[in-house]
Amino acid sequence: MKANEIMTSAKRTLSKVGFGLQKKSPEILVGVGIVGAVASAVLACKATTKAGAIVEESKNSLADIRGAKENGVTKATLKIGRASCRERV
Image (cartoon, rainbow, N blue to C red; front, side, top):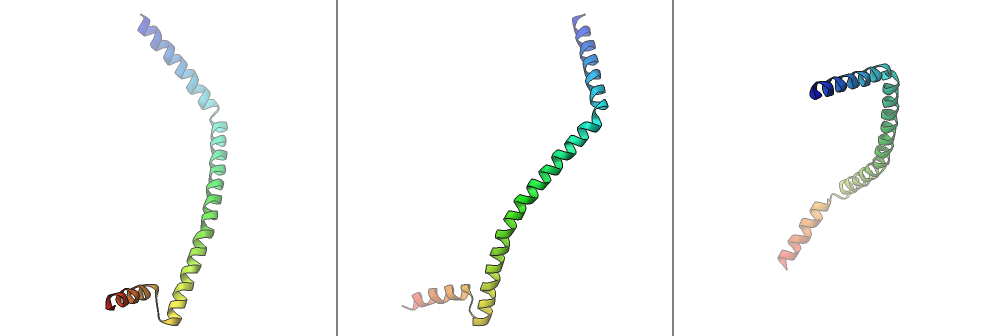
């Protein structure tokens, strides 16, 4: 008998909770939407700060490439040249 009463009580409680959630679902969904919008804004701001560093690194790389094109020498060529000079000595 005890198990039957417990099951009935649990079923009734879950039914009440389900009805309450169903009744308040518009408010819950609006809250979830607001939290999602704020989280998106925060993540976008974090990504924007990282983008500045990436752009700066790209500018430096482009400057190196343009310098190598003008001089006809790349950093890899310089490393190979130094290594071959050491071998000759």
